[in-house]
Image (cartoon, rainbow, N blue to C red; front, side, top):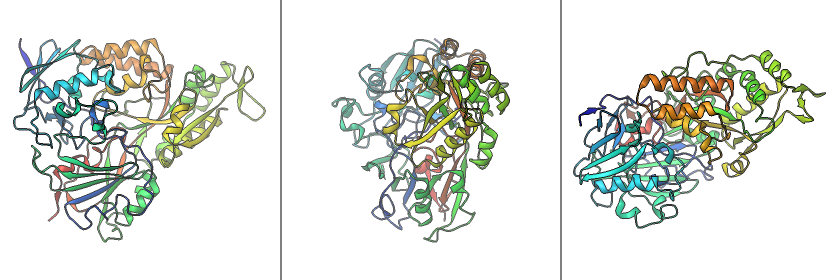
Length: 540
């Protein structure tokens, strides 16, 4: 069997590593410099919007890389090219694209001192694929037929079919078999007390407040210069901005309107200079259209809403230009975008579609059909001003077409039980490969599976093309399949996509050569200028 190297394969972007979801910190010093090494140049404290539900890769944590605690076989560099991590090199791929062989890096140890071996790789993938494991993303590994330990330093993945982006899936973090196999995968304390091979070791997790880390002194890539690293979980955007100004944070993600309030060269109350860093993303905001609801389940209503929204106005007014209109999960500047699927704002056409479908204006201007008002609820996450503004703008545009959208906020705990019938101002975006986002978002087999396919969308053409695209490594055939999917979404929308959002970060100007990657939806501690905090170098 001859083999071909995949060296040079690029990821269109990084899908974030550490998931972000949570409540605002309640006291001024929670997660701030007090208690984390105030004044220590080897300390960094950053503010994030959310927190992970779990820290176990077996349950989905860090599946797209940059988890800080763990490493995958591969990782991404600053230019989003795949590079070796726990693997000694990029994999050798068989000519038929169904066998990937990885040689493992020598001398790597977990942070508890135990050696990393091929057994850990096999255990990680087999456990995730086990039907008893509660990992909502296991469909992303559907191509795997068998994971084989060839010897202590060689692992072979046998695929059911040639799955072009498979190497991208091997950024998935590897867990220590000697710890994880002794616990219940779904309820064991590994999810809160993880052990990995990564550059940082978790030292504490105060739910709803902060995650704290210390540098792994024996990290195979070299001990980080940032010795203490804290992720302060601050759900409220305004609070995050305030704590940045008071000097409690070294950096934070902020929505465009708040990022714009920080002027170039401005100093926080601690006298440290601040600057804004912008990251391009695949991160979109959309509105789910639940098929179970008699209004949003009506194809005519879906099409009308898709045309009634003024995306350009949202980019200008809400994002202040830091983004672009979204017509689906694929950004318009991606090579995977299907040209010709852009939908201009056309209120007249939206009204015509509703008229022809029998939705007639009532006395108050809200349309009715068969005695039912064209009205539905739309939830957004409390404290998320960006989602709030998108939700209100969407409702305003919908009303002009004669559709009433009742906007309300809540926590995810309040929102999730209502997702079957109520619309949600959602977000997503996974740039490494179109399969990673679109399959979970659109395939009918995943309808109602947690946050997968939240609209419970079912379209035969879309299902067929999703399957076709993931079962070939022919770029032209894959592009044709994803083009068909995007055209079908224009005819039968599953969601109303609004904008693709640039990520804005305000950070203290203490570190040199800060960079960002093309980022996913903001569910990751690995996103932002701290995607490679382990490599940060202080300014002299």
